Amino acid sequence: MSRNRIFLLTGLLVTLLLAGVVSSFASSAPDGLDAAARKGCTFDAQGNITGGDCLAKRAADNQTADSPLADYGIRGLDGPLSTGLAGAIGVLVTLGVGYGVFRLVRRRPTSVG
Image 1 (cartoon, rainbow, N blue to C red):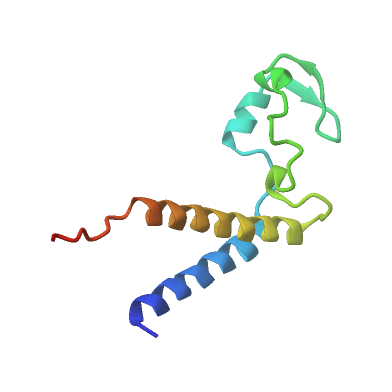
Image 2 (image 1 turned 120 degrees about the horizontal axis):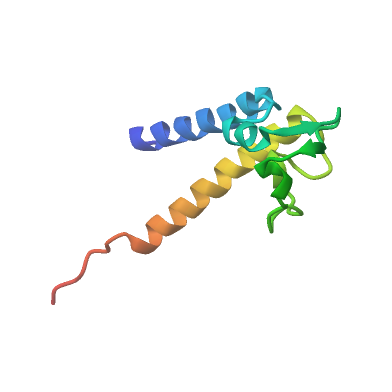
């Protein structure tokens, strides 16, 4: 096996490990954009808006809200396993699409005859 292939496979394994394991420790607290959109509103214990005026009040689900990998998890699974698997699947899909695009646009040697 060539050194390039070993390097690429090692990178793939490290990426899958990071996406699958480290993503399980992600915080469930709102990120910066979400926190800024929630300023000015009041919330109940479940996180539902109960009053006030903020950007989050006008938020709506996007078109992929019912997809199998929506909301950083896998529908039907709960907890860190769901987040880790969704991260690993996301890595594989991203690499697959990138590889496919690369194969389509790479230059092929032209024969001069």
